[in-house]
Length: 154
Image (tube, rainbow, N blue to C red; front, side, top):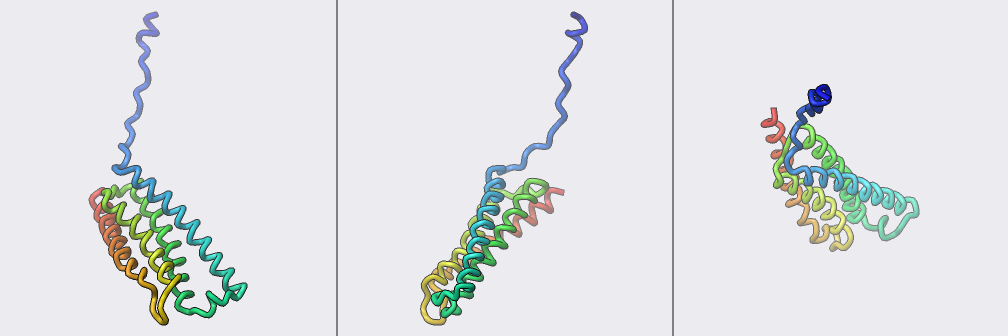
């Protein structure tokens, strides 16, 4: 009986505390995967429009260019979201404003190009193109914030 009383449960090893804003970081990863799936699918559809020589797509070079920009920016920003989530989980703990800025910018940029290509005047992109510069500023802000967070985590 004394032996049972002497046995103590093993002490749990100390674990690193989870990064702040874990929900936002997981949200970045989820948004990154969804963004990749959506914009890669749109890229596949654009290839189909080329293959089947869709006149509404082929006869409008402005629309073709804007849709390609949407696809490229959407897919690449999806990868950026995944990379940012990976970095944030491992060593850089960005604040909520940086995470929100990156997520919103990654949504605005490709959406601006896509919507501007749907309906546009002759030779100019549609009005939705004005969403692209704020999206770019948000992404730059997030990148600088992540860099500063990475630097301060050393």
